Image (tube, rainbow, N blue to C red):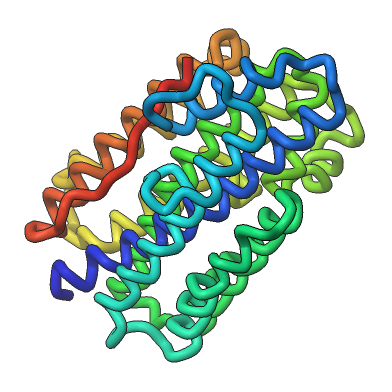
Length: 308
């Protein structure tokens, strides 16, 4: 496959996932502020913007600042509008490999951005999540399971790990954790699955364990890392008897095994620091993928942010 096409499909997956997960994070932030008016809104909003990698965070940031910078600002790599716009640009570059339905769905989502500016936050988040879910469903039912599909899944998985790390860090840093963790579970679509798995017991540590380590839940960090590893392994297809020829595969595998085989208490003791370490490792894996497969790929804008 041409590196240009592979690069576009990888970033379509990343940008669509970024838009979806940013909408989920905005849901968490809004719910926590609404349910507990005693929270220091400025401090909470500044913390979230820092976690999301926004540069020059305003001193007086409030929920409206968060909405502007994370939802509507077309110039910010952290925003929903930017992610959807870039997903469309990459779809244009890979138009010949996408089905008509998938291209039309991405294009219609981009065209809906102007109307989205007038939506309430809860309506905007719902609209973004439904549109990205629709595109993911169309991709699942129309893309052949060739290298293009693997690059799309790889990009989506890499971004999902990064964004889930941000959500977990946001919940861990919240002053009202008893509100943040259930809201985070709901934002990830995990609340009902979590309740079934833990038989109705709600505890912050169990919520963190589920979103980090549950192998059966597709949005957990471990499950998503495994999906990324599987996609990379099929792309490599080298049949090596030992070791890894692909640096990205080694980095992702190490990240997964370190989470799986370390005591949970050790991970959650300082969860923001652990998630920052995970985020750095995923960023290094993404750079390695770019160097290996997209030799002529242009530089992409995306700030790691600080999870501390």
